[in-house]
Image 1: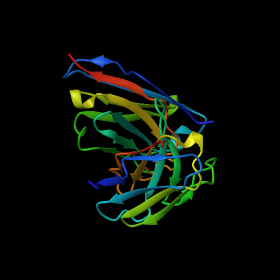
Image 2: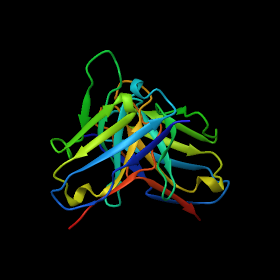
Image 3: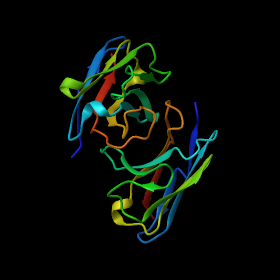
Image 4: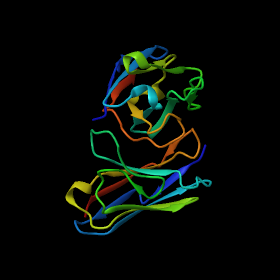
Length: 124
Length: 107
């Protein structure tokens, strides 16, 4: 059974930083692309970032324009863990952040399994 | 970015009704479209991918159709467990975009 367990969500002040983690189990983590998707009441669901799985080529990363230059996605296949480093946070980044699996090693596909999410609140 | 517009935003229906939700893309996404169901406090759950392929374990009363810019999700006979919010997702580009959601509520 695929399981994705996010952690790291917290209350942070504007301009602050936070690192989210997602521990995966139930599948061969290294073989699949992974993404982060966030959901806030005002903006609905928003794709944030994606990282490719092992493809024989260097790892590829992708970002939404709204987070480019501020967020960094990474993975540690030895720990079956996905990360999202978030810097210079603003109120618009307040959301539940979901870790989501892609059914292929390429990041260019639909999203199949979702974690339960971790809440990030940016407020002073 | 490709914009996805769902209609209606809210749909009132009864158990046993046939329900259709539409998703329109601002430009062609070929057949690279998925549908999700989300219940309050829970993560979205994949129903349909590649416009019409049923995800494993999803009841056959759910079906999808369309290509290019117009897509539909149909529930052939609404069941009590189906009252939820539904989202479409285009993945024609790596910069995926979701529709704004359609809430299916009790009439």
